[in-house]
Length: 539
Ligand code: URP
Ligand code: ZN
Ligand code: ZN
Image (cartoon, rainbow, N blue to C red; front, side):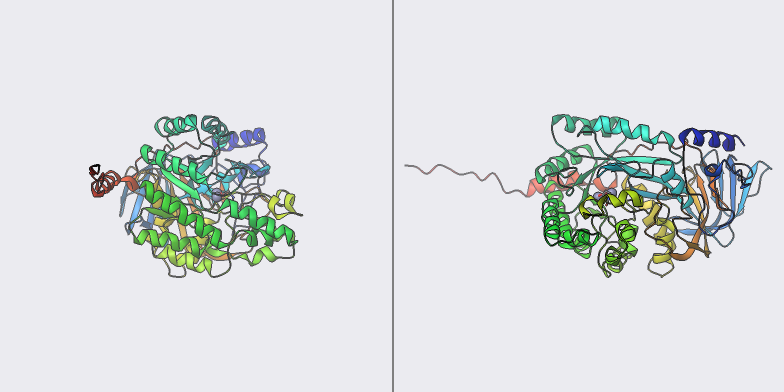
């Protein structure tokens, strides 16, 4: 009940507005506070078990990335205490959840989101509360968001994101974007890693005139990342050529959303991906390529991996399952909601990215959740260059990856856990606290019923956006329960969440991708056949 009352009060204070209903529970699916704290009798907080400190999940198949087993899971005070068959029910103060016939898996971790981000003259419509509501309703229990510096200043950027995250309802971490270079930025990067728990920095090779970096900056940044044990991430598109391509479209009179796709073809993504990979090779540091959208980019990653380079490729849900035909829709509201960068590509790229994910060329799935409503998208009605770039996905990712990858037989259930949770935890060095159901892990857990269906729609999702790029999509596999740090936050279509309850998760440097880097540096130095001793020719 405490949760119920506190949530209602806080939400009124925050003025939170959320679309209330979630998939498959049309009559019983209210996001409790949004309609006046469950006034319609949805039982928010009470009876949902949200505040029960001890939970026993019985009879399910517990899936970790390394194995699946029939076992019960006992949770106490936010942690997994035991994972084994036939754990007896202790006393009445334990909430027992029957998971027979269902999968019990680590909550999803989304490596790529933009909540309340100032971008292209506006701000993304999901903040750290509505974004978290959407995430939890969809089975994601942690995400890593990108801090954008303020006028290039990292510390000011972090302060601003700390404030944004005060309303968080689940655990989150931060990456940091680097948008300019000088000695202060270099020093601040060190402080971000050593004092503030940030182990990854993103370099935008596109968005000329705002976030874009030069090759010189990228090179400095890669070297600094390496020295700090921080992972360099790139948005890989050739921003100069994109600007040229955009002008080309405008000169041709192509001003609508289709001009977005036409102005930045896959070759520009492939070129930048190749360039970033080669610069990372020159520096000998690991590289993470965000939102891989095209075969061109994916093949550059495959080639680098074949040659032994440490490159991580992240597809996003939109790239895996959508195609660019939507951008030609005659209805601007529909076409514009698919505008993101790099663009959603021609059909065929999606299937190739799925195959790359199933074969390990690409390693984990993000969303790039970056939502703008139809009013914001309409800023670019006369000029596609002004349509804010971004699509939704934080709520849909777990369902769509299950349906498109597991239900089609392309990946196993253990691989599902790997690509939606474990791999992210490992890359960002928070495994096995996150990304696993093991004794001592945080109790971030979902229960997925493979027999139930889901359907996506803007009228039922929890994002604040009035549109959804997966509108009308149906599939199999339904997240019925989400447990966030030992609290049941989503059950029977009811969200039971508390603004301010999320925790910042520090990500320590020198994750597994850095193992052995110093040895390969030493081998490289030993291989140099220089300096050559030369005597001066005698006169
Ligand atoms: O269109 C996109 N991807 N918007 C978010 C910013 C970014 O590039 O990641
Ligand atoms: Zn990007
Ligand atoms: Zn992004």
